[in-house]
Structure formats: structure tokens, C-alpha cells
Length: 574
Ligand code: GLY
Image (cartoon, rainbow, N blue to C red; front, side, top):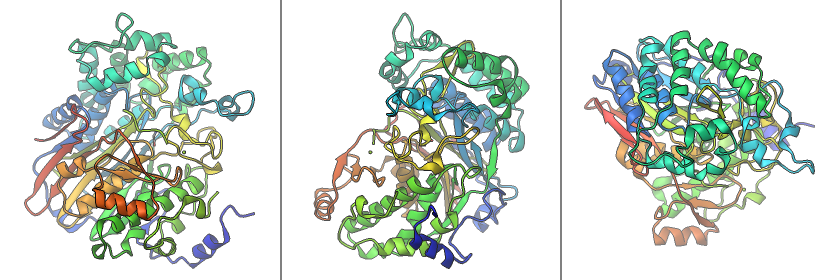
């Protein structure tokens, strides 16, 4: 039997090639004809917004030394691996959307982790067949083969101006000389203390005299300094072969994991065509599978395109956005996975005709219970995953979202490497239709297989208009997609970078059937009206942390803003 319901096959058979969101050959990245204003101009300055001021300053240092936005991205990401290990790092992976000014090339860089060859779904089940959440989230079985080091080497080699060694220098220096950990890192270590103590190399790295590092004291990471130095000297082989690879595999196997040196040597960065969707005079360039983010954002915008939002009051505008989110997340659960392994009906999902059908299923004045939608649970987003945005003086731009998955990843540090491994295996549907840590459900499309990439919500995006451009993204587990969507809508509505990152947010992900709201996002009248329409509003904290760079082509002005929910972040123009 076909995996797709009959009505969707009928829609699919109606599709023409004139979709306003393009899924054209996803495997071949295309140079995109640049918008005239973007092509003609150079900002003359650079702007970076990241979740940590040391990382932003590392990127600006590399730009001052003659590097471009892509060299800066290497400096920012590697420094975050040292100063913000709770969110991303060498033991994790990233996804990026970039635009090269010289030829308008737009490409998605997929440095996502992959499952090791010996992956076995039984390892994630208890003896009674129930999901083993500990194996999925903690220790070496929860870790995919990292993509971050290969992705950074790829960026430097294919898009950068400087040698990798120069772009990695600030991270090596910071790890070797030490830095004062911020309250968020100290809080993350305290939160995950019990799990960190299970692994001797993790305890040795993250505790000082048995306690999380104290405020105002220098904290050094010499093992990670050495690992990044080998990457700097030897390129990707410095991590995926030789001393580091041997130590990673030995540590993983000694603690019950199943990596091999062949898994590391085989890791490949993938370049893919981004998803491009037009909305209200802007072109949004965003993440394709194995992220679900771009498909969901495109689906939501295609639904909203046909709604005369200007004629609606706030509550009814929000109603349509929530209903569009609900339908996009339903499709996330049903269809999406690694494009190298599963066939996905992307032409259908990105088609305006499909969006027309979904829009017509929205009642003008009433919430649709998720249980009423044909189809095949959430935890608050903590301090995990990170996003940064960069535009350089030539107009090169890059949006990078990077992660080790949950706070401090698997909590497992591979002895002798300083590398904290991710727990990205939980982003697979390890047990079909059982929620992962973000309450996301999944089907066989996202089942683990050797060498397969687990589905992500990461949604690094460019929003390109004739007058204004934004580089945008956010961490936040499943809420990444809706936070980025709300940021894109705010930018298109004319808001500036500071207002976009500060605005309060809301989220719906099909299941659980409720609207997660940041306290204060809706006034009393809107709240009352939404409840009358049948929505359950569920207060949620924390949100963020979004980092946005904007470029106004009319006065050639750059702006950079870091989420105020994260005091150690920095958006800076230089
Ligand atoms: N690990 C979170 C994500 O990739 O969506």
C-alpha cells in the first residue's frame, strides 16, 4: 500500500512545476540569480550576531585579518565549541545557508551527524520493549558521528579566504589560555551534573574540586585546544583519522558505544540546494531536509500567502499562523527524513496547490483539533543548540545553526580529546511515534540506518528583499522552526534586528495539541479570543536565543542583534 493517503496522491498528480517554493533537484546546489540590490552593493562593514561575545569577537578578529564571512563562521563556531559547549561543539554538527556575493551562489552546507554503521535500534529499547530514554540521550550510544569539524574545514577550503589554521586560532587560544565561564554554562553543568559524573573524562573536564566552575575564575580546556590544533594543522584528517579518531573510538567503545574508525573516516559533508520560497516581495532561502525547518517554514508561508491578514484582527491573524504551524508539523512527523535515504513528496509539500488545500481546511473562527487532521507530546527548550548570523563588507552572508542536541549533548567527553559528544541519535525516530526530547514524533522516514542523518529542526535562513536583507536563525529544539518563522514575519513587517530578537514568541507543533506561549506574548483581549476559538494556551520558558543581522540596502546600513534573553550574546557591526 502507498505510504501517502489518496487525497494527497491526487493533489500530487495535479502539481505543475510552477510552485512558488522550489524543490528543484535537491542534490545539485544551484547558483541563484541575485536580487539586483544585493548584487550591486557592498556593505563596506561586517556584522556578526552570536550567543557569546567571545565568539562574535573571534569572528570580527578574523575579518579584520582579511577573512570573509565564511572564515568568520569558522572562528565563531570553533570558539562556541570552547565557550558554549552546552549548545554546540566539535562533537556535534551544524547546518548553514550561505550566499557568496561574487557570483550569487546560494547553498546549504549539511554538516549534520550520521548514525554509525553498527547502529541497532534494539540498543534504544528496554528489555520489555519500552523506549530506553537514557540510551537515547546520555552516553556514547546517543552520539552520532560528528559533522562539525568536517563542516568547518569544508567552509574554509571552499568558501574562505584564510587558511583554516588562522580561522581556528582564536578558539585554540581561548581553550588554552582559559576564560571565565558565563552563568549559563555554569548552570548547564549544574543541571547535568549527575550525568556528567557518570563518565570520568566528563567529570574531569567540567568539575573543579568536584563542583561546577566558579564565577570569575579562569577555566581552561587544554585537551580541546590540542584537538582543534590538529584540525588546524591537518584539516579534516586531523579529527577523522589518526590520533584524535583513535582516541574517540577507544573512549566510545570502552563505555559501551559502537563507533569505528571507519565511521569517522567515511564522514562526508553534503552540499544541497536550499529551499527558496517567495513571500510578500521577499525570497526566503532556508534549510532543506535533513532539516524539517525549511519545508515547514515554506509550507506555513504558502498557507499564509492566501489569507488576507490585513483585514483580520490580531487574534484571527495568530489563529491562521497557529493552524498553518499545526499542519506543517503534522507533515514533519509523517514524511521527512534524510534525503539520501528516503523519498519525500517535497514537490507536494512545497506546492501552492497543496497549501491551498490546507488553507481551505482551516475554519475561520475555530481551532482544528490535531486529532481531526488525517495523520499517521514537549519539553522546554533548554540551553542547547546555538545560532549565529554574519554579513561581511562584500555582502557575503552566512546563517549557521549548530548543535550537540540536548544541553551538554550526551554529557560524554571522549578521554584525551576534550570533545563532548552529541546526543543527536535522539533526533531519529528511534521508536516510531514515540516522542523525542522535544516531544516530536516521527515515522519510518526518520528511522535510524547506518550512515543516515537524523532529522533536524535547524532552520538557518536568509530573507532577501529588494530593499532589505536579513540573516536569521535560532536554537530551541522543535520551536526553532516557529521562532524563525515569527522572526521572518517580523522582518517582513519592517521590524529591525533588535525588535525581532526581543519579540515574544508562540509555538504549535501538532502534538501536543496546545499553543506554547511566552508570558506576555498576547494581550488579554487576544488571549480571550484565542481561548474562545478553542486554543489551549500553555505558558513556556525559556525561548530563544535568536541572533540576527540585517542589511538595509537603501542606506547601506548593517545592524546586528543578539537575543536579550541571553546577556552574554553580542551583535556587533565593525
Ligand atoms: N538537535 C536539534 C535539532 O537538530 O533539531
